[in-house]
Length: 149
Image 1 (cartoon, rainbow, N blue to C red):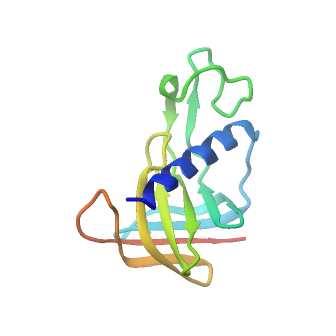
Image 2 (cartoon, rainbow, N blue to C red):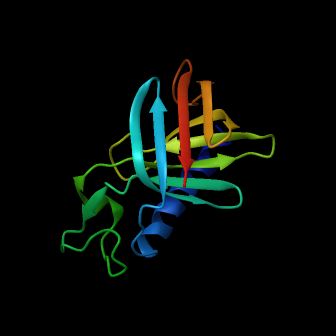
Image 3 (cartoon, rainbow, N blue to C red):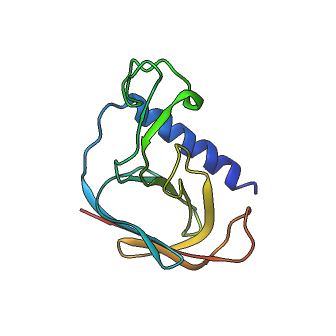
């Protein structure tokens, strides 16, 4: 639980940063499978930072009540006021010093990447686990996130 709370704040910070960062474009190919179901398979936006990565299929579209897109720097509404026009997939991967990673995503709906798991390991362009653990769910989850340019 102690590890997940900072992850949620990281996800929110990345989302807010991206809102003000202007437009993003497809720069990679990504696949995301959770428990055998493929949620992303194709072009995506992928950015790697020192200790984390973010991914986005760029399909999430939302507007403020005044009609401004949520990526517009002039946006003047809160996240709670946003009207979602179309859902997409996005999230973050936080790399831990021990070589594992924690993964959070939005489950294909909404504006928050708050479905989080721990215990992913890297194999080439992919991070995966056959038994990722979530502090909010019982049991384990199979996850595979891959990205390449």
